[in-house]
Amino acid sequence: RVPSRPARPPAPKERDTMEAVKAQVAQVRQYLLKSSVGPKLKQLEDQAGVPIEYAFIALLGLVVLLLLFGIGGSLISNLVGFLYPTYCSFKAIESDGQDDDTQWLTYWVVYSTFVLLESFVDVLLYWIPFFYAIKVGLLIWLMKGGAKTVYDNIIKDVLKKYESKIDSAVGAMGSSAEALASEAENISKKD
Image 1: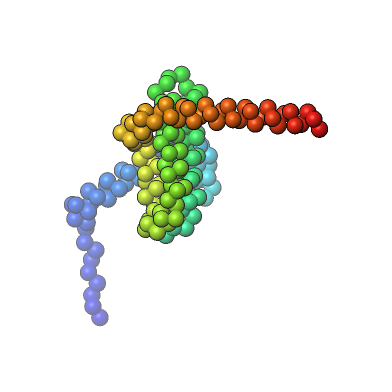
Image 2 (image 1 turned 60 degrees about the vertical axis):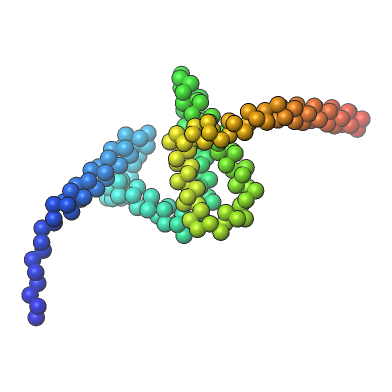
C-alpha cells in the first residue's frame, strides 16, 4: 500500500490567482444585487440555496457552450443584439441628456447595416467556425462603444458619399408610394 501524501499548501501564485477569481465572483454578485432585479434574484437565491453569482456564471457558461457548438446561435445573437440595446434605448429616450441618445442611435445604425450585410452573405457565414460566438462578441463590443468607431470610420463616409443619391431615391419612393396610395383610395371609392 502506498502511503498518501499530505495535501500541499497552494503556491503563492495559485493563492493570488484564487484570490483574484474570488474577487471577480464577488464583483459579479454585487453587480447582480445592485441591478433592478436584485431583490428577485436574492429571493430566488434563498429559495434555491444556490448563490446567484454561481447560477449566473453557470448560465453564462451554458450560453457560451451553446454558441461554440452552434446550437441556437441565431436566437442567442438576436437576443443579445435586440433585448439589451432596446432597453438601453428606452432608458436613453426617457433620460434628460442626449449623449446616451446618440450612443444608442449610433448602435442601431451600425447594427442595421450589419444585419443588412449579413442577410446577403448568410450562406457563406454559416461555414465560418464559431460565427455566432464571434457575432455575439462583436455585438457586445458595438454596445460598449465600438459602434461609434465603426460609424465614424466606415458608415458615415459611405453615407456622405451617396447622400444626394439616397435622398433622391427616398424622395422618388415617397412620391411613388403617395401615388399608389391615392390610386388605391380611388379604386376603393369606386367599389
